[in-house]
Each structure stands twice: as structure tokens, then as C-alpha cells.
Image 1 (cartoon, rainbow, N blue to C red):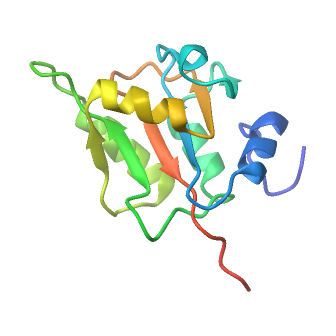
Image 2 (cartoon, one colour; image 1 turned 90 degrees about the horizontal axis):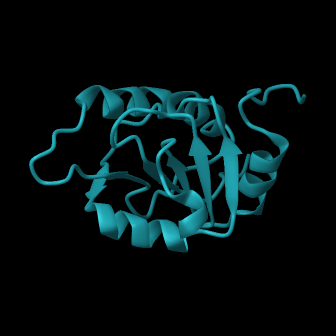
Length: 139
């Protein structure tokens, strides 16, 4: 364990976050997401909710300030997402900016191009989120 790093951030996830560059994206998916089908770089976080992961990741990752840095999957027509999911994610990230909503198959296409996918233990419907990495400010 390292000081100041949440225990939900595994060594493998920490390595992935460090490897990412400006504009790279990471998907934090729910437990039902076909991560291994979408991307060759998959980190498993079974049993860990997406909210916990987001809270653990955000102190380590600067969000992009030049593009909308947060994307969530939109509900399929006729389906309703639970608004509490977005609220919990916003709180975990400390983020009050724009969240882009993306149609399911467009979200899948974007996930294929992401740097990595973290398959969480999240069971909330439409519990998938993409974060775009920004530039870490200098001290």
C-alpha cells in the first residue's frame, strides 16, 4: 500500500493511470459491461462500486479542461436511468461541469478506443462512465 492512494486503486490501475497521456480516456464500467470484448487493456475491480473507484481515481487524475471530460451512457429509448447514479458520480468526482450523454452503441465504439476499461462491481443500470485525462498542473 502507498500513502495517500485509495486501497481501491490497485497496482495495475495505478500503472494504467500513470501511462495515460493528455486526452486519453478511461472507462469505469458497470459489472455487466462487455469490457474484454471492447478493449485489450482491461483492469478488473470486482466487488468495488464505480463510486468508490471514481473517488479513489480523481485525486490522481486531472480531468481535461479543453473538452467535456465526463461521458455517461444514455438510456435506451423507453428506459429511464436512475438520476441518483449521476449524482453519486458527480459527488465522488467533485465535478459540477457538463456530462455528455452518449447513445449505447456510440458509447461502445468510444470504449473500444479508450486507453483502458476498468470493469467494476457496479450494478446500477447505466453505471458506465468515461473520464478524459487532462494535463497535470505544475506546482
